[in-house]
Amino acid sequence: MILYAVLMMVVLGAILGLGLGIADKYLKVEVDKRVEMVTSLLPGYNCGGCGFPGCSGMAEALVDKSMDTILCKPCKAEKKAEIITYLKETPGPDGSTITLKG
Ligand code: SF4
Image 1 (tube, rainbow, N blue to C red):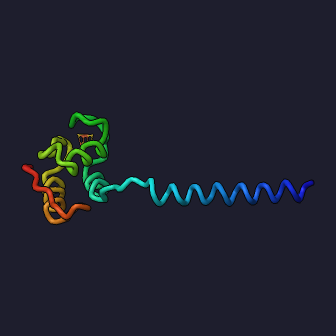
Image 2 (tube, rainbow, N blue to C red; image 1 turned 90 degrees about the horizontal axis):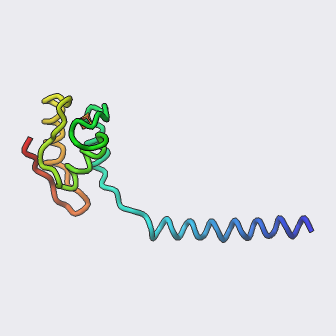
């Protein structure tokens, strides 16, 4: 009886593992790696001063082109320039780059 229970657990684990493997392959969401980089260049205060709930929201808006200006007041000028240069020189998954106003 115990052997039967162990066998059922192994079979169930294999089936669920296979399901998770298939879901990982076909249901994954492509993430633009530039969002992570821009987020790391922003101050990280998550103060909401830019109108977004946190720095990652501001970074996503810059990368998805819904914003063309870095509205972060605490961000120093050299960091803003670094973000502008990074997005201008780094193509996204579709091969396009982003030109920000400032
Ligand atoms: S204003 Fe700057 S520091 Fe504050 S949440 Fe926006 S990006 Fe982050």
